[in-house]
Image 1 (tube, rainbow, N blue to C red):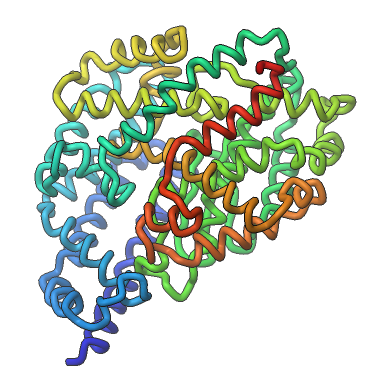
Image 2: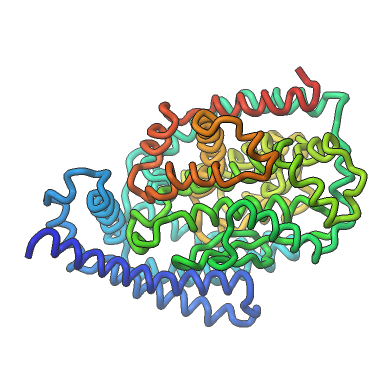
Length: 503
C-alpha cells in the first residue's frame, strides 16, 4: 500500500471518529441548555459509553500502524503542508491517548458529568461542601492522567499541553510576570482617579426581549451566521461547534444589567466566528480544528474588548441601542463608553474589566499549581481562594458562589485550562496590532459599521490554517515577534489612562 493510500485510510477513520465525537458535542450542549435535572445519571452513562468508544477508535493498533508508516513517509516531511500537519497532530494525539487506560477515560467522563450537576447545585446554594467530594475525585483522576501521559518538570505541564500545545507552567509564569508586576499600580492609578464613570446607566431596566433582539442584530453584523448557528440562554456561557454548519453559542440575561448578555454574547461570538471560519473540507482532521485554547480565546477577547468596547464601535451602535432600550435614551456617547470600560476589582471573572481580568486568571493558575504539587488540599481551597483573592483585589468574596464555586471548569476536569484565558489576552493584543498594521484605520471602519475587513483578516491569517502551525509559530508568523505581555500592557495604558485622566 502506498503512503497516499494509507493517508486516505487514516483520513477516513479520523473523519468518521469526528462524526461520532460530534454526537458528544450535542449531548454536552443539551446538558447545559435543555436537559431536565433528573436526566443527569443517564447522561453520565451516555458520556461514559461514548468516551470509551471514542478512546477505542483513537487508540486502535491499526491507527498506530498507519501513523508509524506515515510519520516516516514523504508526506510528513513538510510539517506545514496539509498532510504534514495532519500527520504531526494525529501522531501527537495518538501518543497521548494510548498512554491513558480506557478505564480511566471512562471513569473521568462519568465523574465529570456527575460533578457538573453537583457544581450547579453547590453554586446555587453557595455551599462548597456539596462540591468538595466531586472535586477531590477529579483532582485524583487528573493527577493520574498527568502521570500516565508523562511530563518534564511538573505534572501541570502534561495538562497544560492539552490546551496550549508546547507551553509549560514556567513559560506561563514568565509571561504573566509583567502583568503581575505592572497591573496593580495601573489599577491603583485608575481607581484613585477623581474621574470615574457613572455605571448606573448600565444597571437600568433592559427588557430581556429587547436584549435578545439587539444582541442578535449585533452578532449577525459581526459575521455570525444564524443559518449555521444558534444563540441560547444557559447558566455559564460557552460556545460549541457541533460540526460544519452547526456552531452554537450561549449567553445569560439580566434585566437590570446590560453587560452580561451583550458583552458575553460578543465574547462567545468571537469563539463562534473562529469555529465557522475553520474550513469545512478539513472537518475531522487537525487542519479543521482550532490550534489552541489561547488562540481561540484571542478571538473572543478581541471582539469583546478591542472591538465592542471601543469608542468607534459605539459611535455606530449606540443610536441603535437607544432604539431598542428606553433606558439608554439621552445617554451620551462619552458616558456610555466610559461606563462600558469601567475598571473596578470585582468577584466574578466573566464580568471582570479588561485589566483586572488577568488577576482572576493568575489566582486560579496559582491555586491549580498548588493543588497539583500537593501544596494545597481540597479541604483548604475556599480559604486559600479568599486569601489570594484579597491579595490581588483588596477584598474577599462574600460567599462561595462568588468565590471558589463561580467557574464550571473544575467540575469538567479542565485543570490546566485557565492560563489560556490570559494567554488569549496576550495573543489578542499582539494580533490586533498586526491587524491595524495590515488593514489601516480600523476605528474608521467600525464607525461605519464595517466589520468584514477584520473578520476576513482573521479568517485569512488564523481560521483557515486550523492546526497547520503551533500556537507560537502562528503568532510569530503573523506578528513578526514572539508573544509577550508588552502589547497588552501598552494597550491598557493607551486606552485607560486617558479615559480616566490618570496620567
